[in-house]
Image 1 (cartoon, rainbow, N blue to C red):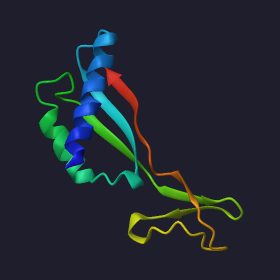
Image 2 (cartoon, rainbow, N blue to C red):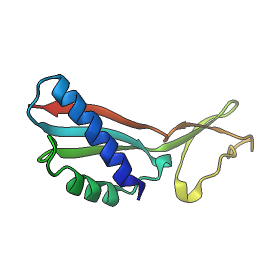
Image 3 (tube, rainbow, N blue to C red):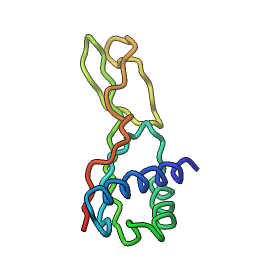
Image 4 (cartoon, helix red, strand yellow):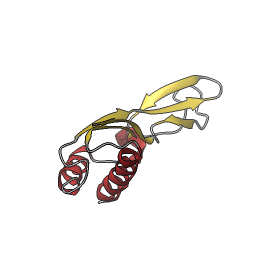
Length: 113
């Protein structure tokens, strides 16, 4: 379950930032997670609920924005696709597309107190 490793890293970074700013606790952590990362939302929530105990994020809310998978063809433009029907071939001309969005994994903001 790579979600546990992801949560451990997020909490570590969030705590470092909170301490750097003199905060006593973390109220909210906002993440952007690309669909192509293969993160299971339920596993992420579960891991966060367990791993936040005893940290500055013990009562924090985790807010996750899922970024859809978007692919682009140099000739025809961009299109959105899902993991279940992932195809990098352009639906119009058949050229191999390039993933533009969906790989994100970032902490967007922290609400500290």
